[in-house]
Image (cartoon, rainbow, N blue to C red; front, side, top):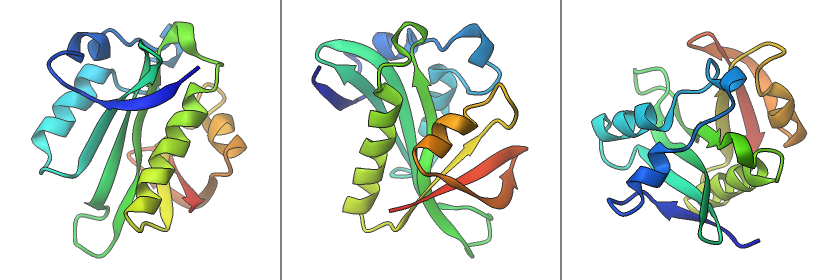
Length: 152
């Protein structure tokens, strides 16, 4: 198993768009197409979309956010994991952990001290996944989602 991240290009766009989470997870994460549209409309350098590759197989998608204006007033600048979509048939194989570790490494490289993520609350959300990776809550919510924080 050789895991790596790959930039989204015209050559791999179809593979990115083919990624589908399990049907019971669709309410908790936007599809890749929506994420790529968001990346397109944000200023350059804010969104960091990547494919998660296992050798030559596309197994998932992630999108980090880099130095966003969290409160829209310039008072709080944050970076973190914006989206994580592991294809339904590829879940449970460590790809999600790899994705979080890869984003953490990129943020460390950029000098960032904290990695933020939000998740759909409730028993059907990914809270346990993030807690196993040492994310903690900070009492905040964003758009009805729980805010998690990982010290880097």
